[in-house]
Each structure stands twice: as C-alpha cells, then as structure tokens.
Image 1 (tube, rainbow, N blue to C red):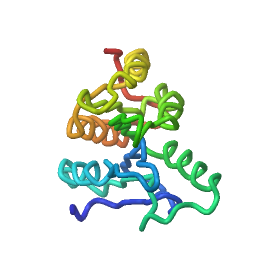
Image 2 (image 1 turned 180 degrees about the vertical axis):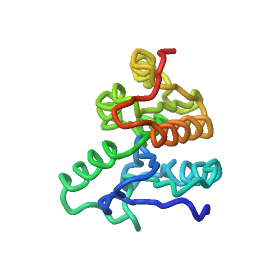
Image 3 (image 1 turned 90 degrees about the horizontal axis):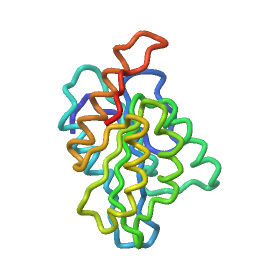
Length: 177
C-alpha cells in the first residue's frame, strides 16, 4: 500500500486537514455472502494517488469488523466524516438482496448539492435499474457519473486535490452533464 495513504475507520478521530475521500455506498449486510467493495476502492485510491502529501480515506466500515455499540455513534461519525471530506465517492453496486443501499439513497440526496459528490453506478451490477433515479439527480446537480470503480476513484481524487487548492469561499466549477 502507498505510504501516503491514511485510512480512518468508523468512529476513529477525523483528521484536521488535508485531501480526503469518504467511501459512501452500501455495506454488505451482516451474515450475508456479499463482500465489501471498499477494499477494492482503497486499493484503487492507493494506486492512483500521486503521492503529493497524504490522502486520508474515510470508511464507514469498522476496523476489525467491530460494529458500533450505539447506532447514533455510527450515524453521527458518518455524518461528520462526509461533511469533513473533500470528496464523497459514492459507489453503488446495487443488489437488492445483499446490498440494497437504502441509507445510501438518503445520503446521496443529502450530499448531491454539496459539490463534493461523485457517483459511480456500474451498469453490470445485479439491479442497475435501481440506480436510475440517483443518476438523474446527479445530472441535475452537476455530479459526475461514472460506470467503473477506477473512473469513480479518478474523479474523486481530482475533486479532492482541486478542493485543497482552492481559496476559502470558492467552490469547484461543476457543469451539469
């Protein structure tokens, strides 16, 4: 793994500054057969990161798989982490049986107008038709829409590094597609 990558797991202290990407999207259900997509995203972020400083990856999954004792602790951390991130990478390999992403739908709705969201919706996922509305909303808000994880990661890194270069009070130029 790239030495310039710092992973912050659920409920761990958030960094004060620096480029960061929050990994938003469905988490496999406990006891299910689905594997998390986040390890692949972390690997791809490390592969594409050019090494200019340290990139912080914020993941809502818990270190060692230990879940929060209280639901509010998890939700509170995720809300703060998304707000603190320079980019929010939404990867939605929708599968209604194993990763329905109902909470993800709400989070995307909250974050679509922030200028920090990137939407990745693989067309070959089990239920791609369930991502159509998110794609529509993304386009209405100028959120980049990608079909592969490497493309989604590249867009998130571009946004995270651009955000770090802006002057206070500026927002990235985002034209609707």
